[in-house]
Image 1: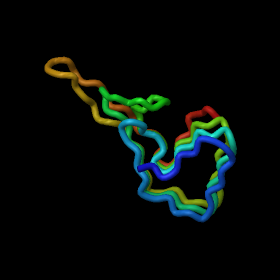
Image 2: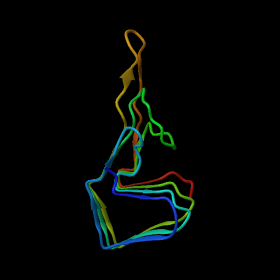
Image 3: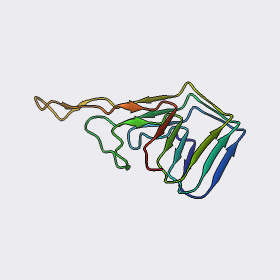
Image 4: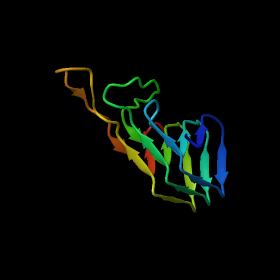
Length: 127
């Protein structure tokens, strides 16, 4: 389960240990923190560790934008137009992996699994 999903406003996370968050197949982004806020998000004096994001399989029922075929931002996925600041914090031991390939049936070939990007932090460039 993802730890934080930030979708609006200015947010400060201070002095926390954000650990063991995980998001998979139907979303695949931001196991620790998913940020799509237009405001400023600041993480200060915190530790983000052992979080993970896994992309969807080659043939999937992924419903979350952006495309969830890849796993992105094991610790933090930033897609907001606002700013993300990480101050005096530790980001370590996180992972981002692609999903498995998958086949529709006999002789049809399998779809490729997505890639994994940004084990610690992934910025999709929107902000």
